[in-house]
Length: 302
Image (cartoon, rainbow, N blue to C red):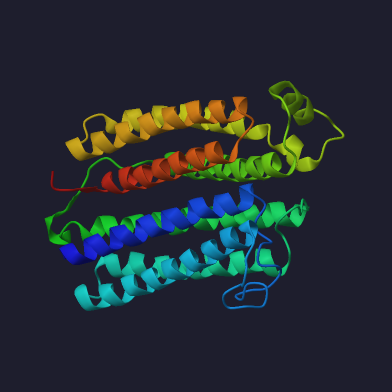
């Protein structure tokens, strides 16, 4: 099923681009570029003489629509290519469910005007939910592509599995780091600091906006979570096959790069380009982590 694997990979890449471009929309304050209209843009199918903010938001909507069509294609293609019990069909269907949810959340942000300069608690909550749904969607798309690469009859179960406590820790770390990162990015966008010292003063100012005071938690969650993940994954790599070890090292290296990227982002006062780089590394880290966890369940051909 090489054609399906190629198609699944392209859909994964397209969705990754949509995620990154969505960060551009947020970081540039372009979420209101099409007004409060959805799915139309300022009441038009194609906005005439659009401004930069409108172009950014309209591009995001177009690519999001293409991504949705791509996932629909994954489901149809999977039904024609794989038997009912094959995991590719399951992961493709779940990808469709969560990209629909992703679209609805995006529409809600626009229709309820939780974009632009909106700094309400409601926006923070929806942004956090948006982030979690995005991670789930990215995981299912990754597994759709991954499981299409290998014939299931050639796999066997591994003897080592993550303990329930380890799985709970992984989930807690991902939730804390992801949500705190999304809120920190929103705070950086809405309340930019002119210097590192000023930013630190804002973080600990009891009269500062709640988005500013919350962003200080992200570095602590990220560093603490990374240390726990380092330990668990390094232990899980012991005695594993070559592919699992490679994926494990991929997680460790990307996690280290991400920590350095976060520090650079902080020092540079979170410029748009660095926010995108930081998110890109985070998404790659998540993809490799999903593959690592899945590969601990089954032994894949080398």
